[in-house]
Image (cartoon, rainbow, N blue to C red):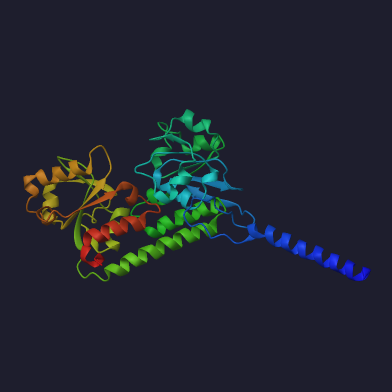
Length: 337
């Protein structure tokens, strides 16, 4: 009998231990992967490999991921957030538009240094070890200082390559995203972001299908006496991907001023208005409609305008958004359910 009681006691202890063990294991269940960028990115498990890049005429060497990054334009800020790197950011600046909703929570936790470029004093007060800009204008004597000056202060820099080269395309944007992934040791996340962009873009271009005769498109940024327009640049590449042709793609400049007479001669079927600058979209559209000399242009007669925010047209993660806006404006019938 004593032996039976002992065995019963042992079995009871084992039963209690099993129950306690199963209760305590609930936190070990796999959680769904975060794809919004709101959670900090998991660093790649492989050891950090030295990253050497050539940027803005300088060779920059990284032996570890930056820990105190400052982003200086919206499209590069959103790249960092898409990669889940908000915990490595100590400041951000220069929004052109509202941040994408999926990144708002992460963005709200990062100090906003300025609505334009911050002063050198404000920038340096964050104790940055890395400055990431979308445009060359961030690193001048009048802004934060040159890349050489910042390097001498121990601050590494990167300017978005696709935003500074002639006629960049999406592959150039992908290279930038991948480079940031390498610098911060989140290559797997960078590849996932690029893969999702490609998937979304493929869905849009499939919807349009083959186009035998692309629409003639005029991009209007601003200007009254003359028009400032996009020529051979990234926006032109986006337009060509969804069945359009920039009427000024033969000019070998990124942005240029053209006469209204030349716009009339090329007779655009659609006008893309860039939502940026001091004038509102409505003011820009009213200016175009009020010009009597433009009244016979196809786009004006049919009032075919597409509004494209500069944030969507910049070389960042918004390419699918830009392409969808353009595609729906060019070929609305292909998007009817």
